[in-house]
Length: 341
Image (cartoon, rainbow, N blue to C red):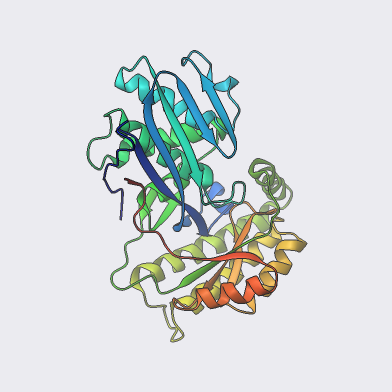
């Protein structure tokens, strides 16, 4: 698990292409803001960023294009969609002592605004490509890439914790809490013991507004929220122990069924704090019919839901859901993290 090296020259211009996976939050969203832990998992959908030296600055993606002759523009004046990559380009050139520029071009397999970590993956891949093409990324320098990626993401999302960028850079599964930061989940033996299906509601959400709504619920229902947070902390602790040991406590049915039941329980907490809606509830109800259990992943109010299946059952479950009109896919765990090629 971790970043892997390799270099690909394109047309002799020394172009580097880096890629990084998206992510889902398995458990703990929202409650992590108030002291609980969260569990994140990198998935096998990626963002690819190519980098090459150039005379000016050019950033291209399906979300827009930015061209300028120098780094004189303040990052705050750049469109928020492209601001993180502009920060990466500017900072990488500064670190390399380069007065010219750099070109960054983005191709993404992850839908934006769906809660699957497209922004974080873009920042991780962009930082890795820019640092490497400018000679500032020797070997497996995960720390430099993760720092630059987290700083870049905060230019557009000031409250970003860095957990998403850590999951994308490292791959696999991690835990995160605001006090201790992230830590890799390392299983004692065997595979993950479960499969995932991701289903997109098609509703794009504003994370900050949903977080603000949860804060309002906490202010108006302090005792209930405290109890929900306590139960969520216990649930995440149990899940973490299961993921590390690979054997559910007092449960002969297996890892996937235990995770599915915990997902359904976690969903009830998320519904209570108001981050679900009729579309998500309907989608989750159908997912529960073909899986061990499902829940919102990420902020809620839209975006995606995830469902737990047996390791060899995710493709069949995804096909069943797709036949009923769901925009969904089977998601493998990405253990490679950020790569350059």
